[in-house]
View 1 (cartoon, rainbow, N blue to C red):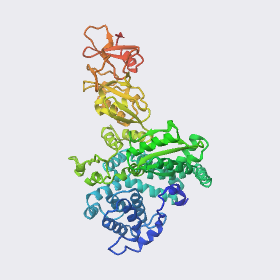
View 2: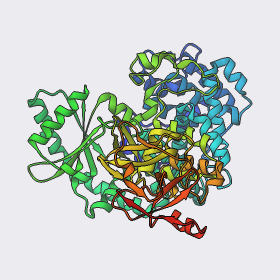
View 3: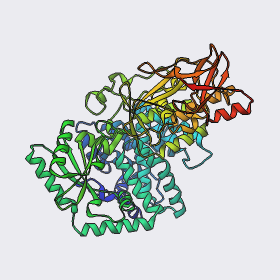
View 4: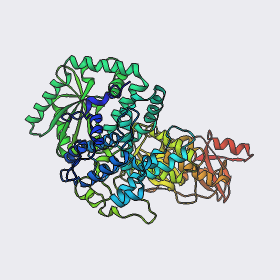
Length: 619
């Protein structure tokens, strides 16, 4: 299988950019650099793509990086027979087209020099500075990770955490993998399959988490072609047949343009073809594909308010499919993605999915963290390439040497917290893989304001640790949509949750909480606490606890009554009983009676220890 045959995503490349002939560029590189006063011809495409996003970029450093990379790799060849320099050139071009800043492109050109040539990190630092050296070192470390080896979780943990401090390292790695996947046809079939599986299980989910959809979708198609060749061939044929049948979305897009023009809304309306995997998934979901299932309408506007104006016009002038509406502008996804999603039916009944976003949102949707620029310079905050609240002082390094990336998505920040709290590398690896497998998110609202993003199936336990971190060890229960609820309650999209905490900071979670924890943050925190307090296994926490809500007084705690004078009543955190649950209690140290649901597994353990139950009733 040729490299071209494994490039199903090529149809989605930005129109107007010529196909890059890497073999020709490689031959040009071998002939030696051009005159010293301009970029070598082999770098011309990279320079053009970079200047398209950064018109004032200084290309001198790129020229120096290219000359060093070309000289270092001269005489080296890829398995395809191409000069090796074609690989860093291709990786750099991918990042340049996504809008990466100059420092990232410089490191990309040099990303294999330290590992594969005589160039040292000290040389890179002396020639290009600490930032480029840091990125090259991070990519070099990632190259040593065998993502697919079960025996390597500790290595993966160290390497991933090292890159987590600067998302640009992972951006280079993803572009590196994309080019390797494009040229995988020269490998043996079994090696192609092994690399494709690792790409599917680890790197594609990472690309999703970092919001780099342009890389993610092409990687998905390449993996699809290798691991599922029959389904890929069938999908390819469907797309080809649809292309000859006429564009079903063209008429709807013209109607949308007319409606927005008459409403005085300046907007760009595009027809975006779906990639191969997306078409395949639609076929599995719908059974028979419609002409409008092969693409989506994309409406680009200038301001956030314009997005809602467009939505109003579409829902007024067309028939909306309400179940398809999602607002990711008010509630952005975990990977920085923002957009309005809807679907409308035209006069003939054809249904078209519509994405509405600003030009800025579109750039972030395609390039994710790559579009955010250099997070360690004030320019990232001041030039509009970073978040509006980016700290201009972010260039400073914390005292412990860890870099604080102000543009780092919340997921990557949580990853760094998980690895610090994980009791061992296997736990970290297992929870990371489980989290990467999640491809959706629900939004729940905090009673005191704000939102939490959680995976589907998350419970109040997960919400507690997402909101309060280790303080959630003392969580006694929750109110969901104003009603008392046990910690095991599964939350739904749009629920409002209020966590009820214990005032005793020494309180800890029960082992049963692990049965209800879905997020890595919750599971790692609970596992860590239980490992540090083995004496609490099997027994309810002994200290008296006075529960209190996070933002308002809790009512109803004292309505559990026992016939023991002077006893303090505590509701067990493991099962969180609420009226009218059937309950029982057990005396523990300090004159406390812990109240459990009768079906709670802790009750069985207490009876097995010959502990005498105490009669409890709701008052």
